Amino acid sequence: MNILLFNPRALTYNPRLPNSILQVAASIDKEHNWFFVDGNLEQDPWSKLENYLRNNTIDCFGVTVMPGPQLKQAIPYSKKIKELYPNIKIVWGGYFASNQYKVCIESGFVDYIINGPGDVTFPRLLNSIGKNESLHDIKNLIFVEDGKIIKTAKEELLNQDTLPELPYDKLNSIYNLQNYLPRTFLGKKTIGYHSSFGCPFTCSFCAVVPIYNARWKGKSAESIYKDVKKLIEQYKGDSVEFHDNNFFVSEKRAVSFAKLIKAHKINWWGEARIDTMDKYSDESLKILSDSGCRMIFFGAETGNDELLKKMDKGGTQTGAQIINFATRLKKFNIIPEYSFVLGTPAETEEKVFAQINEDIEFIKKVKVANPKTEIIIYTYSPVPTEGSDLYEAVIKSGFQFPQKLEDWMNPAWENFDLRKNPLTPWLKPYMIDRIKNFETVLNACYPTNSDVRLNNFKRTVLKTFGYWRYNFGFYKYPKEINFLHRVWRYRQPEIEGF
Ligand code: B12
Ligand code: SF4
Image (cartoon, rainbow, N blue to C red; front, side, top):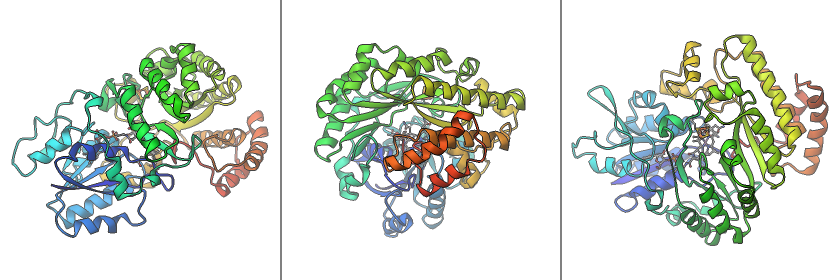
């Protein structure tokens, strides 16, 4: 079969290696022809897609979809293809498709959804299409039959070391692979690598939970090293960003990888949990640091212990631990990148606002403990983790996800996806202003290290403006800082990369 794969635009610059598409392509590489259009690299992706479509030889259009900006191409292009080429089967995969499957499949222009990993599901689906075979025993699949949505059983996570190799060389023949190695604070050519699926925890605000239900499986340190080494030697990559939800689940695996990569003298970055890594020995943390691990992203979420319990942060993370761990990392020269989720629901309006203010004060304490800590602030955007306390509170408040797929493209829902200005009923405009203004002042007083375009002069000017506001707690109307951020195109790591 001829499969046209599409990565909708997620970034305006610095595209990362399209790992979702690479892994999907690897799963069908031996049996089918595949073509690829990357929305991140095309000025006009539709005309590129049309070049493939107009010959009437494409059997299936496969799109990877995460929430946010990708929907702006995924939705209209899929709809148009269904109208113009009704015989082409449209398959969506990725976090948005899995978590919001109902609205996707009810749109009428998405035929199949891959619910979680597609490595076995996608080739099996392709082999069944057109053969009138039952799809019920293909795991991780969602489709409509006799007007009913069918969600098949979840597949056990596969042994990641037995998956087929990613087709980097074929990708390089379609788009020069150098396009995918951006300059970041880690190096001049940063490799994006994904080494594990899922996460063993069940935080009640997290989109990973409904798909993976506390399961995690990773490649071995040796397999990761083999791929990374190829990208370093053959394509001159000089640093690595690990895109795993939770790279550091296994201390043994992380330390083994660190020992293998050390000789290459590269910088690397990954995501972790504070309570997991606080259990790492000093010796392990030193090995990670010596191997080039420069910064680690942690979901700190809040300093409030009661709320941490509600968020189901595995039951062991506390406010005190968040601060102590930031202090502990100082001696290993690893920068903690802490993300906070502000604006969670509470019984009363006063309580919601008080919690936001408490978190702001807590973030300032973290900065005292370790001034190098990078702070990322999100506002809470619910994901459908049915059954969790937090989700019950969300539903009780009257919150509803869009009922139509196209509605997800509205700017208001895009902001919801970006976790910057959600449409949650308990968050009043003055609270959102408080969060945004504090974030602006914080980003001026402590400009992020991950924006490589911010030179020393710009940093000093921003710090001068931010310093007095930050220290006097005067966050209102930071117009002068907003102006500088606009002029210098201040880059928030969580929106345009990591
Ligand atoms: C890389 C990445 C990005 C990149 C863009 C990637 C790109 N496509 O160009 C950037 C940095 C731009 C980005 C941005 C955002 N991201 Co993002 N991103 C990721 C990340 C870290 C890795 C994705 C990846 O490559 N995975 C590796 C592949 C192999 O796994 P996979 O995608 O799951 O693919 C498998 C299956 O899902 C399935 N599949 C997937 N697609 C398809 C397609 C077909 C046809 C088939 C058959 C199967 C299939 O099969 C694959 C192989 O088994 C994920 C987290 C994660 N670990 O996956 C978050 C993640 C997807 N992002 C997320 C979010 C929310 C965002 C943002 C919207 C918000 C934010 N502030 O983070 C922004 C949007 C900003 C923007 N400009 O678009 C969330 C989604 C949560 C949710 N509610 O659903 C995730 C899960 C992170 C998280 N834990 O919160 N992101
Ligand atoms: S530890 Fe991180 S990835 Fe895992 S469930 Fe919690 S928030 Fe999600």
